[in-house]
Each structure stands twice: as C-alpha cells, then as structure tokens.
Image (cartoon, rainbow, N blue to C red):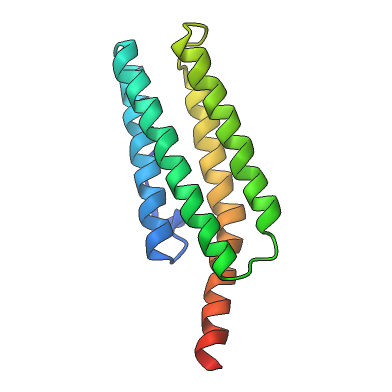
Length: 139
C-alpha cells in the first residue's frame, strides 16, 4: 500500500469533492513515486506544479460550495487553504531554486495535511452541505 492510496474512509459522500480528493491523492502519489525512483528535477518539478495547480482548482470549487451553502466556518476553512497554498508554493520555489529536495518528510507533511484536512475540516463542510440541501428540499 502506497503513502497516497485512496481509501473509502476519506469519502465525504459528496461526489465532486470525493473525485477531486481522489485526484489530489493520485497526483501526490505520482510525486511520491517520482521521488522514490530518483526522477529528474524536471519530472518532479512538473508533478509538483500539477499538484499545486489542481489543489488551487479544488480549493476554489470547495470555497464556492461553502459560499453557496452559507457555511458558517468558511473563513477558518479558507484560511487553512491559504496557509497550505503558501506552504506548498514556498516548497516549490525552494525546489526550483535548488534549495530543497523532495524528501519523505515533505511527502509525510503532504499526507498528514491531506488526511487531517479531509477527515476534520472537509468532513464538517460536507455534512453542512448535506444538511443545507436537505433543508432546501423540504422547504
């Protein structure tokens, strides 16, 4: 089993969010494999860029859902998104400048962040969306 294998325990029972999380896990898994294989800077750099770009797309989709469903915890959630984005962009800049190697520590940071964010913060968002949709359906 790989470091970024998707499991049903990460499912939030929201098809769009789950598909995007699966894609994030897949991209992170490819980055991890490239690191383990000692792939060149161009391969790792490209995978890191793709992961960052997709993360930003996913965050914008998630934030739109939170706005649409009037999620009260949106500000704190968006703050988490901005913090991770800044951290990963910093990693990317350091990597591109040759001041950072992608290591198991870096991969473990990404894994821990994804797992914590999905199972804690995103779970609350998904529950709120389901409850809000249920209330709208009954109105």
